[in-house]
Image (cartoon, rainbow, N blue to C red; front, top):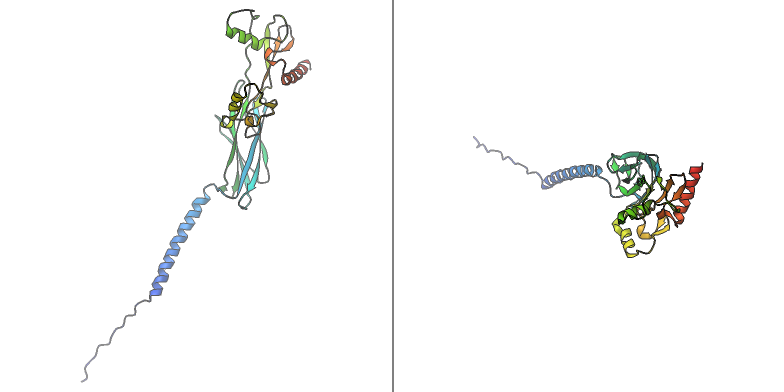
Length: 278
């Protein structure tokens, strides 16, 4: 009887390159997942590239108790990215919720009506524009602005005295004294213009210019253009000039002393006189 010989069992080891492929596939899957989540997170944040709004300017006009804010802007493309689907405009004023509008991408200006400041008050606001790319916003561009409504000083109820010996009373009389001879009771003071857009003094440059040039006027054209240091981000002066006129007890309408010998106030006075006549 022949002797039984046990068969040998040969176990084949997997090839190393198969393990390497499996490891590489696992790494690739992890990298793809991380990239996907990164793209999702970035899509939720404002993009710093592509088309952005620039040269945002506001032109403000008083309409009764309200303000019409005309905002204009430009879209510039520094990265040759896709054009925005639309534009987001935000106009806000201090102490109130901002007004937000979504506009066609080709529209480069819009008018927003908001509440204005009371007499003697100042409205401080901002205008912001950004491009809308699907669910993403491009970098927002904002410009601050201000609008001033001058207050009206209460006129004296009696005739001003000649000599009180007090500096404060002298200053008060100079502010309301009519530009005519004789004593008259001032019934009403009128301030023109009734409101004026005034740009913020960015960095205090205008105040510094006035300190360095106390004898010079900031104006090139009153309430329109001033020296470069006194022009703000909306192309408006950072200062304003107002003129005071008075209605006397005999019905005459005159310029106050601090509004005489001023060509700008002379022009406003003539316009006011025509309004009174008509």
